[in-house]
Image 1 (spheres, rainbow, N blue to C red):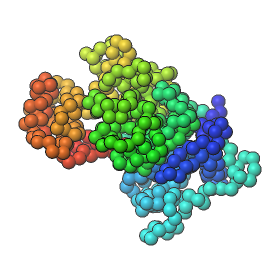
Image 2: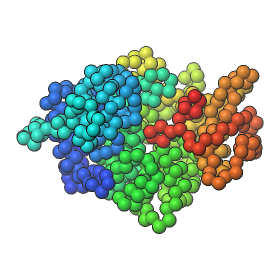
Image 3: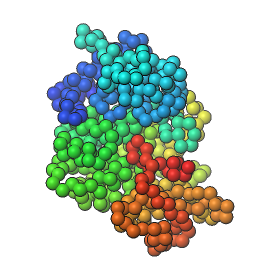
Length: 508
């Protein structure tokens, strides 16, 4: 079956050519313009010698040029490799080499690290953004050189490559918390199905304006924000990075209707003063990427007057696996499996466990959204996909009504004196304390007990809170073996590009 994910852009451009596809700093890009520009970029890639199936790396922040490069590379039949703009040269080089990238588009503001990596990997580099500036390495070519006129010269120039639906469309590298990052191969069909089903779940509409602050290089931002919005003909309100005031300005100025975010973003927005702001266009928020504390959900919903629908997904599943419907949701749950996807909970021997919170095991997934595999990693792929099920590494349970609950990551589990301690349960208690702004729980080695429980806490401004007070609060709400024996205070918790708290950094 022939199919290319870029079809979602072209079909929307045909249906509503003048509709806004994206808005950034007040500048609007129509679907007609985005379709034309990406077609010209695809033609330029072909003229440069790029062949279908070769990898094009994009190290770009949230900006309209990302959309041009993303859909243009897809139209050319290339595999898109989105990279974090904050990666350093050795990290970039690893991704380029491991993926056998053919060329790279980098942002001019961070060109030096990308240039070192491209030179080391022998990969041609093009720059997006402002023109050459002081100190820019010599010999750098610019993305404009790949914007060809061939697509305007006649039939065929801007055509969409008619690849196979099972061809790899996007290569998303996992975070690498258990070793070197691995490239999850996501197909055109998987990405299409995921954005189509996910959009239906929260009622994506043609008149939606979706906040686009989640990083485009991350599967959440790529699949659940860009693809969903373009698939249903909405508009992306593009914000380069998460800063609460900038986000609130965009929500008000661009009349946003949908807020996709991770819990730390929603938590930060819940703390903002929105007095006098007109945010009446908002209709729904979507949370994913990490577990959403109940107190954060309640505070956000109360302040903004909209529902937060929590979902769950991974890089290996093209984003969404399960979701809470507006008319069928449960607090603290990640919802029920989306259409065409099956989930189950299994023990260490892959035996399926019955429903109930007393039956905690690893969450397994199968369906149209599960990756082809990890690029060049057949043994790890076979282990991860054994028995035809994706083994997620997430620990949870399913209740009698079919709602799934994440208890924690397997790697985050703390085993204290033989007892399993799930950090998320303790974090829920900590977030309910009026003097605590943010919290994370980790384990540290202990000679006597194997591991000890440590809470890392950020105080609210003006809160008079010491370690003993935190531990006493936990003792009121938790069994003794779950309570932290050590409390560390920080002014800010380390976070990744999506806003997820980096427990690996806390452990170090």
